[in-house]
Image (cartoon, rainbow, N blue to C red; front, top):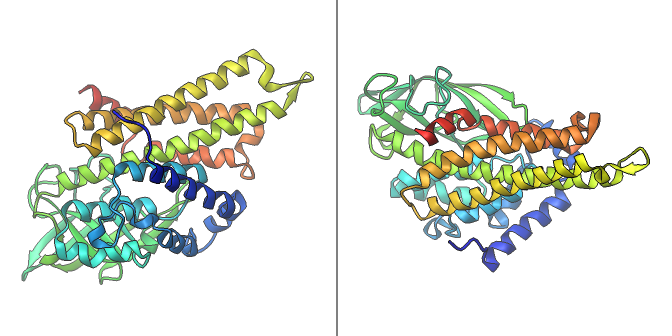
Amino acid sequence: MDLAYTDEQNMLRESIEKFLASEYDLSARQNLVASDTGFSTQHWQTYADLGWLGMPIAEDFGGLGGDLVDTMIMFEAFGKGLVIEPVLSTLVLFAGALEIAGSEDQRQTYLPSIVTGDLQGSLAYVEACAPTDLHVVETTAMKSNGNFVITGTKSVVLHAASAHHFLISARTSGKASDQSGISLFLVAADSDGISRKDYPTVDGLRASELILDQVEVPATACVGNLGEGLTVLQQVVNRGILAISAEAVGAMQVLYESTIEYTKQREQFDHPLAEFQVVKHRLTEMFIEYNLAKSLCMKATMLENQKTDDAQRHIHALKFLVGKTSRFVGQNAVQLHGGMGMTEDLAIAHYFKRLMMIDATFGHTDIHLQAFVG
């Protein structure tokens, strides 16, 4: 398996890192987090102008036709910069689901607008009754005069407040916990019957509870085959796991390198902390754990890219390892920085909080460990 990046992929990584280094310092990020939208619409348009939003979208729809490895490279760089724009919700989840199961008309309608930065979307699939089980869906979509009427509540819908369209999972047949009978529907954010309860997440992003009160959509709003939405959800969540795992790898690299620099400068008993043997051992362990996660992220992404039979098992292993490793690296970075590590004025705390949210997204470590061994 060739793990080397191409020249084009290295240029992609360098362009993102260069932009984030010059335009995305901690104070600028904090100001954006505190703003009404929670992110920069100007940055979002810049991402589009630089081609980043078109990277994983096929050339037929105005994109660059990149693969999952290109997305991994992007998200690793985004993790280093603690990017808060809705790239995951729009590009990986919403656009990813349309790419997997959308009709030609649906893809022609929505994907080009994502590439140009004119459209943001979000996948609404989490149910409060069973937030980690994709097949547990209490939201219903009942057929009525050739249309579908959707009723229910979706939880933790990322960047719902800024989304123009939602892709909503709803049950069209069967019981709430059945594997079959789940369908996906495209719904405009301004549709009658939709209301939101918006809130910030602990890592500075935005999410919402989405209340659907008899929201009527045409039959053509269904994405994929009726009743077969679970397969699409599983595929797109796999892409999401790969993306946020790469983001975690980028964040862990910054934590590790920042901690090395700090321990070289901070003195105790007239010696830099980095000279103490116990600190050297701790930094070495952080380096090893980070590289294990990075290696598995690359392998799992390439296996999923090639659609191999064991890709799913590697994705479960990756999500477990990233959760375990990010907690270890984050906690040690905070500890070695002392009390400063938990202050809002130091980037360490913000990276740590983002890593904890990544661990909780798409299922925590115990769930994926059980799936891996089962």
